[in-house]
Image (cartoon, rainbow, N blue to C red; front, side):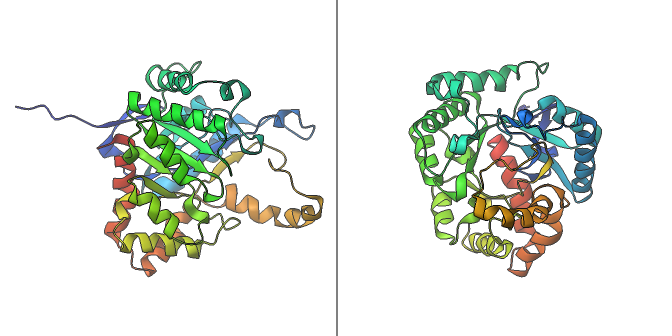
Length: 338
């Protein structure tokens, strides 16, 4: 009798059978930190116990709504904390997948200078070591995917790091999940990955929410990648009505099997101030918006996507079968290649 191969996904608490992934959010965050925030005189050391309690509560909300897997593609240098994720996974019962990979060089948010100087092969070597041996200092916790990112313009260093991500994907056989700034350069990311031999069917081009028209998203899926409409609820960036129109259009056009939805929501933000510079003339307006921003980014229930956005899709003809494909089948195929 032939032996059946069991597909698994690496989570922070070990490999999980792909059949147990269930409904999955592909781009969410437990904690985000920024370089240098600890030097701010108004910074107060974040409380780990509080962060765990907040995240466990949010995971309970998601579990009650039928979600079983939570992918946190936090870049290495933005506060990635695999041991924190493992504690939350153990206490909540949620499957949590973390990633290896650096962030965009844009605005100095990420891509440490040391790694900007590396060749793609050196980047790939580091990623593969984390994927196969475990993240240093964690007792062997392994990522289940690779994070890649570009800014408003794709820098030479970002090109090298994205090429390294493609090389690592070829060797380790995992998914790549990307960040695009303002929904730009998804096509450039595809070009870089393709030229380096990546499997485009295991790539999710993220943050396509800010596209005013569905045409650029359509071009991405026509090349075989997944696309992420994965900042749902962040109406400080784009209206959810437009997101719903884009998703329903892609479904009607036959691209349901390449769409992934998520919220880019953050359980805990440790920075005492915003990570981007605000012109003096805009600071009063930003201060007035601060409460709405906090609500959308980190305080709103994690179930918003299911309780508020999914009904918008249903009103536009998206069926339960389509939703099963988007939330269950697509993440499973992205993460396993099955």
